[in-house]
Image (cartoon, rainbow, N blue to C red; front, side, top):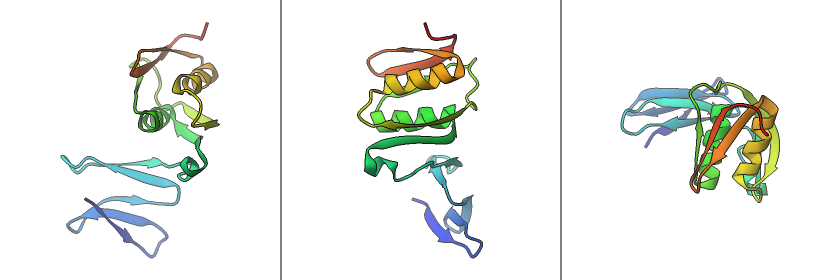
Length: 129
């Protein structure tokens, strides 16, 4: 497991065995692949929103929003290859909402469509009907 090393610049370094894997500033989190030890930083949005039973997107990319929804609901949210995963998402949702309701709003905002199965939602090109 990585350890967090505070620095004097208001940033936090995350590392393993003295090797820095990522440097984070306020509002950022990090995912670390423990097989390859590659670190990917991401915006956390309102990291404690879950304590209020909320999901908040504050300029997260569609890719980050999909990852957050996947973790929150235990489903796979997949973005089709022909969809720009860097589209920005903003909005506040209740955890009581179904993930498909949240995806529908995000898709409508970006002129996208989606399909769903029991355990996955696929975001794809095409306007909602």
